[in-house]
Image (tube, rainbow, N blue to C red; front, side, top):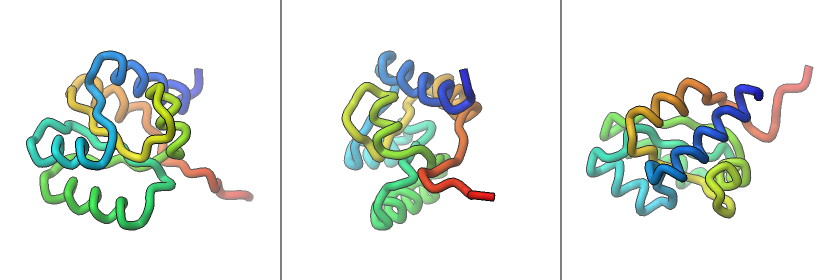
Length: 110
């Protein structure tokens, strides 16, 4: 299993354990309340969403990780395409963080 596969399967585990919230409003609420231990955003999120979530995470001291496409994130969590997730459990946050890789659909070509 590759590092990418591990990160995505860990996202699925967190969803099945009920420790993952998705959707902009729920994620923002979790950040504001201190419930979010880690926020995950798809690399193909809109510029407006990127700025709004990045600013909110910075204000509240919540780590933000960006990577994967909305289809990869949604698929890993057993949902249709998803742009945002908040991890609400420290153990799952640590586990997902350790396997996360920053990548996008456009990779460097050498």
